[in-house]
Length: 179
Image (tube, rainbow, N blue to C red):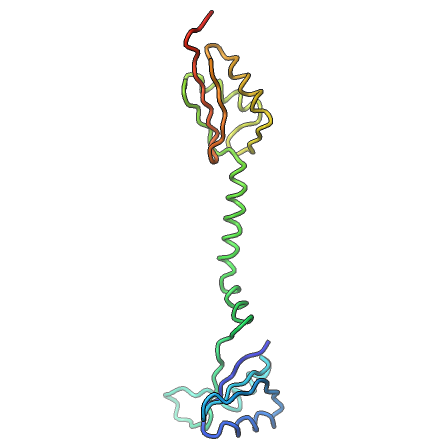
């Protein structure tokens, strides 16, 4: 990895000469202003640079002819550091999407509408065929289930449909019931 470093002071090219004499490899050297030079250096050499030219605070009485600063990353390195900082957010988003896609295939609730007197019988029939809360929904046995519900005494109409994650079973009684 590389770091961008800014050296500031009078005649900053002298600072570059000293860094080269110390064996630090400088890359992409640019003169930004009259008293500032920007360059790229390997991350392992950062400690050497700060040993030679320390970054002095304002309240320190020590004088240094040059001040050095590490500049924030740009390009791919900036994108990578931003991604690393937000890794938990990305992971949470992926988990949320996976759970959303998974929950769309599950039956989370069963609602019987119409003739609610048949609710217990309908739930028993659904349970025998594997349609229970928190189980996957399959449409392959819908015809068999609706035929079994229609065999209940007094039922004239039955409909099964999945709305979101709720299985809605509509049961209507026959207007004229023969015994």
